[in-house]
Length: 337
Ligand code: HSE
Figure 1 (cartoon, protein in one colour):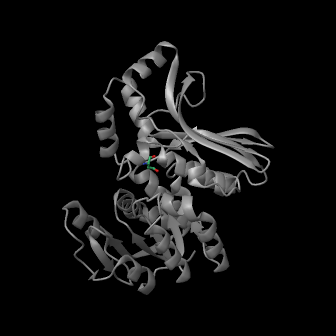
Figure 2: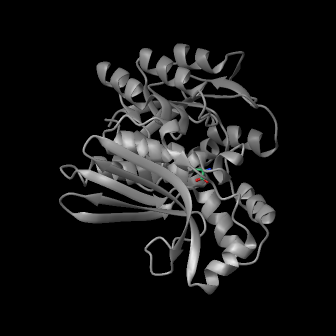
Figure 3: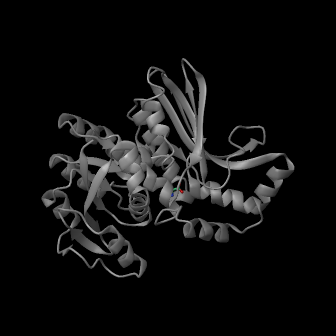
């Protein structure tokens, strides 16, 4: 296996989780997969930019973050785009905050990396929801990879399942719980917490977006629905074509009433393909306890694909989190040969 030189743009919860995994599993990864790496650069709007073509000292980097100071070693007066253009990185991990309006600055980072001969791995939903086709075509034209597993269900391998084990099946519908924060909030409200306290807990656990309205208004789920439709079902759906309602209108009374009726409220994303027509939506639904999605609790996510050859195939697993999404970055890098 080649020795990857990795650069990270954005060093928040997920980036730090990814580096922790690399440090903890260094020997396992080498023994099991022959995986060797140098992390040569990191650029973050809060901590600055560091670059060492022979590899950074990752323990020291984490120590800087832990005590809340800017990077100290190998510091450069570079912006993110300088690191992308001038570093010797072979893989760029784009992990800046998701922007589902313009996709920027992440789309520009991905384009610059691909145009400079670097593979791109990202858990950022902006480029995946708004520019997947353009970026995948650019990557293919240069013999590079544009890998996005972490954009949907964190490290739970939904997109890779469709691309790998389900190859040959046509996926004609998908239905699922795709946002960890809202599912966590609904679960904790069932246990008696207020909406505000449940949201605070979700933020503390690193599930929520920088602006949590992206979660609770359903926009994050809408981004993931769009990604599934375009990446897995081969459509060219636009975000604004997905009808979207979040959970902000769900009250304690609604939750108690549902419980009396033997039901639960869940935020459900749905995609149905009918010939060339695609219908997709995001909406809170009151589902009976017997429904397969009723038992999906906390930050867990689950999706059922309806396929032509296998019927329904479901996958359930973590939908958000530091290590859970950090793992998606590692897993995608392991796929680059
Ligand atoms: N805010 C997102 C969620 C993070 O709660 O699911 C993972 O995409």
